[in-house]
Image 1 (tube, helix red, strand yellow):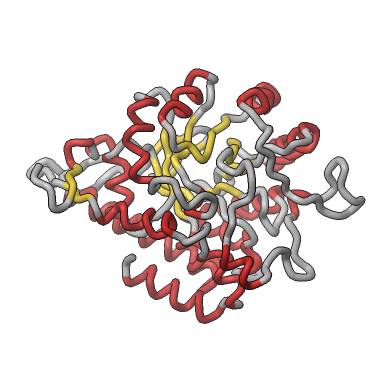
Image 2 (image 1 turned 90 degrees about the horizontal axis):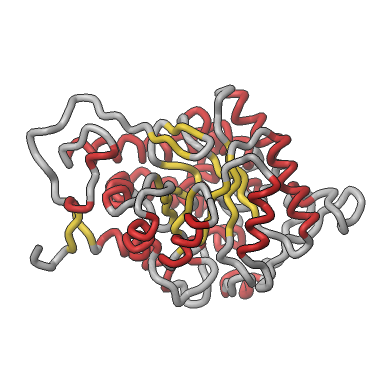
Length: 358
């Protein structure tokens, strides 16, 4: 982690309620995967090319329903108002100012309509995607999709790696199983089957299937990306069923502690997709050089989650902007050192394994 991000993390930890810090920072079970997501980047190195760069590099990337100023988007994370009173509103404004995409969590403590409005108060063309967990009651899922559409979201990101809730032992130890008084998952308010004026719980179900995902695709004109893909065969199915993108992710190490690091799964997923649709990655990205490694291994862009929360907790909107500006500057620097002019110059032949003859 760069000194800038490390400083924001330390300030955030000092300011946050320890229970809420553990909620944001923690992972499943023994938190092996949580650490592996970051360590995976350290196992690899970039092999630069020389004498073929340019003084100004093009960092922009086309994504479903968005054109981002850099290949870094803000991954969906829950309950931003636990980190800062402005919560997702501050995150949305900072992300829009950085010219990139916010994936707004279904478990946001600000309703998606207000999140999109905050982003577009900074940039009328700001792109906000909506993260969706398929719900066992299909009418609830349909209502959530309509809310995202009505809010002006430009894509849906369906998170499919959570047939059951992950076992997060820090939360069990802290007794953190509900939001404090005055906080709620605002997107879950006034839904079918819920209390009038109140919120429903977000439900997980192991009975959900590809057919449920097909019904969501058929119900909306928005691009639909599938998040939580680790197995290459699932990536092939996503292409075959007409998905608009996949996100290689293990939920930031928060769901299942026996899976690979996200970066380790990326090359096989990218090979299975074979350029048919964008491949994003989240999990463990802490430096601009991490972004470059992911792109060289086949990612179209990466998502960052916890660093954004540390910036938000440390300094609100300005802290989030600091995180995104730092990653942009570091990535541009890495691209220059690799001899790159634009994202297409980050290719698989630039990646080697540390400590192994290549």
